[in-house]
Structure formats: C-alpha cells, structure tokens
Image (cartoon, rainbow, N blue to C red; front, top):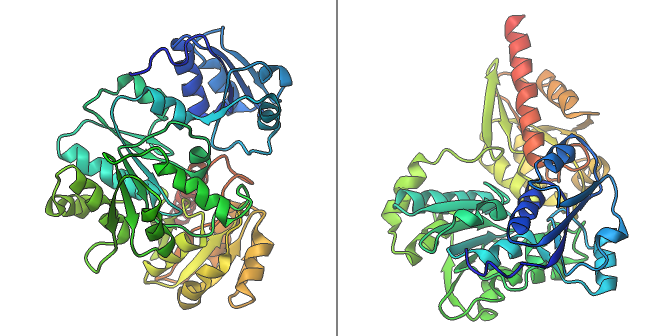
Length: 424
C-alpha cells in the first residue's frame, strides 16, 4: 500500500455495516485509526458482520444511529446505500466533518493502476469483461466495487504492477475527494436513481466526478453514441478515447476493447475472450426450463433501458415479472419493446402502480404479493415456447437486501417449481 499513515491516529465513523463497511472498518483499524461503526439495521446480516470486526476496540452499534458515534470524528465513511438525508450525514454536515466513500479510502491507499467503470447500465458486464481480458493477457487483476470483493478488503494485497477493475456508482462518486483512476469509463447516461439524486443534473454531476482528478497521463473512455456522455470529453483534462457499438461488437464489448487497447491488447485478442464469455449472474441468466418454458433471471436490470435490452434479446413470447422499489425510472421507455414481445406483465413491490400507469393499459397486467406468487402465476399462464423473465426495472430494497438476493431467490423458486412439476 501507499500512504499507509494517512489514517493513522484519525477518528473515523463508518456508516453501514454491510460488506464494504466491514472491510473498511477492519482495514482502518489495522492502519492505526480509531474506528466507530453504526448501522440502522439490527438483523442476521449486520449481527454476523459485527462479529467479524477484528478488534473489540472497534466500537459498533446496530439498530440505531447515535449522535455520539458521529460527533468529534475526523472523517465519516458512508456506505453507498446511505442517503444524504440520513441522520448521521446530517449530523456530520452540522459538525463540518468530511464525508467520503469506501472507494475513496481504498483509492488513497492503492498503489496499482485503477480502471474505474460507471454508467447507468452495463457497469458490471464491462468491468467483468475488462478484468477477463487483462487476466488472460497475463496481468494480475483485482475485480472490486459493486462486484467482486470490496476494494478495502483487497487493497493490502495490491502491488504497483497490479490492475484494479472497479465498478463505481454515482453514490460512491459523489463522496470522492482524491480518487484518481488511471482509466475512467463512462458507458451511458439515462434516467436513474432519482430516489437519491434530486434531479438528472445532480446525477450527471456525480458521474462526472469519475474523472475529476485525472490529468494528461490518464485516460477517459466515453461512449460516442450517447450525446450526453460524448459531451463529457470537453470537461476532462485526461486523454479522451471514444467507443461505439457496431454490428460486430455491442457497446459493452466496444468499451472493453478500447480500454484493452490503452494497455496494448489487440481487438482480435479481446474477441477471443468475448466468444467464451458466458455472461454474469443475474443478468440475462438462463435458470432452467420446464415443459419447454424457459426461465431467465435478469434481476440486475434496475432501469427500464436494461429491461428493454433484455426484451430485445429474447425471441420467444415473454411473461415479464417486474417491480420493486421505485428510483425515479421512466418505465414507459420499456413499453415499445414490451408491446412486441410481452404477453403478460406480473407486478410486485412498491412500484406496481407506477409501472401500471406508465404502461397505460397497453398490456395485460396482473399483480402478485410475493416473488414466489409471481413465478407461479407466470408459469400458469405460459404455453410451450414461452419465456418467464424476471427483469424488475426497480431496486430490490422493498423486498430484498440486494438484487443478488432477489436473483438467488428467483432461482430457488424456479428450481423448486421444476422439482415439484417433474415429481408430479
């Protein structure tokens, strides 16, 4: 690591005790910081993580936020799920305490070359592709951020010659100060996360921070097919590289090819990787088949654009399971594709009424009280050759802890359904 003494002796409060908060707490304590951790949830997951704190000197509280955990701290580290309207961040603002993200902490300490990927859609896929390309080319690569392990959990192992492929969200970028990737990638920009950002302008400003600290020796990779993203090339001091999708390469692949080219890796080499790429879990993931009905897990689709992409890439008639927590998405953007492919929409979660209104009675719509109920209803309406697609267009937090949990539960429900029907 570099800057090992940066946090030594500092008093740090970490808001949130999920994976990134746990890793950050243990890392900072090992570097000589005095650490407090607070999480408003007191459940199986937070209690388990509390037991994983590596020292009794790390003070923690669950099920509440106390002002005493914030007052007098030198730094606050906020997990991505923590809103600026949360009490700890309001208290921190009142005390004038700087608030940073876990990505910022690890970025300060990381000696390796960071490739940071952001965008409204496709971040996980592109981060994964870049990582696979570099690894196959013989590089030592750490895949971190919203996929892989938390950045803070890996930074002690990273050497100067290593690469970090990092998926970063607008929430993480909002709270960076010094974070400086060697390569920043902005894939696209569309309506998203308006449950957390007050408007699209604030959302874009957060995305732009990915290249805030870059200089002439760094690279910014931008989508020339996206007018808003293309315009960001005028705002950065780094060297700008543009990509665009073609008939042979989709936009995600084109972005990965441009990043690989920065490090001297050819397009032909990348295309060999693409041929063997099986996709990522929870993104257009084939789960199973029952009586010639396919089940697809697209739980990671939390925007209308992501769901529209999924619909375009399925040729069979579809029963779509959608819904969850609303985050400012314009669901009508998925309607043109849905009209061509979807025979029934089954809605779950808090956003049911908003999706129904956006679809304007253009499609048959049913509702379900749970994901299990939705899967059973969907299957009961299928005929041979249909597809049941979970592609929610929403975040998961009304019913699940994450899109991963939502996807895993969907797969369990399908597996159980297949087992019962086959046994019968």
